[in-house]
Image (cartoon, rainbow, N blue to C red; front, side, top):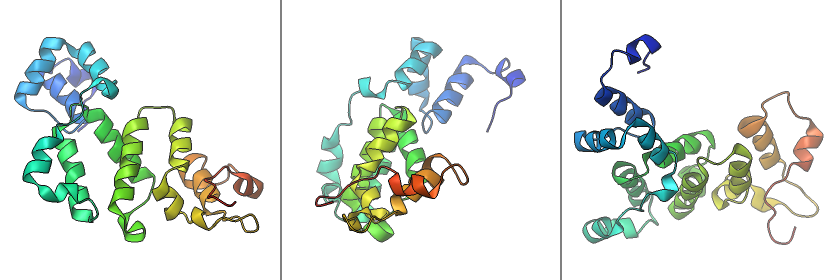
Length: 195
């Protein structure tokens, strides 16, 4: 739900903080909101914008009580693990942005059939989620899930698969009509060994 400028002045500090946590994460408990209020709005925003400064999750609980989480060779535990991260993270903006980038850069288990590869890609999104877009595209171009999803593992010296270049330019960055066929052919893409 969007809040108009006139409504902002009518909200309490607690309501504004709750709105921030809904937009920059997945919400917060009352205790988390009150702790954020003590820090102040600006300090909380700065903390959200620097997920690298937050401690990583304590994996002991999930590994001890949900043994399947160690077995991310199946899709269900891999998905559960990510949901666990979203719920328990101290860096909610990173998780929300990883989810955003995951929905934009279309890869999926249906073709990859490798949950670990998907988790690796989500880690890439998490790590570079607040970087500039160029950095994110470069890192994603090295990502095994993206390479396989767009068939770049089929590249050879003799036959260049243009699928990655086309997707990079059309769907991921410039959009239809803003690049040429020569751009597709010369687009930097992942290079498998032997190319």
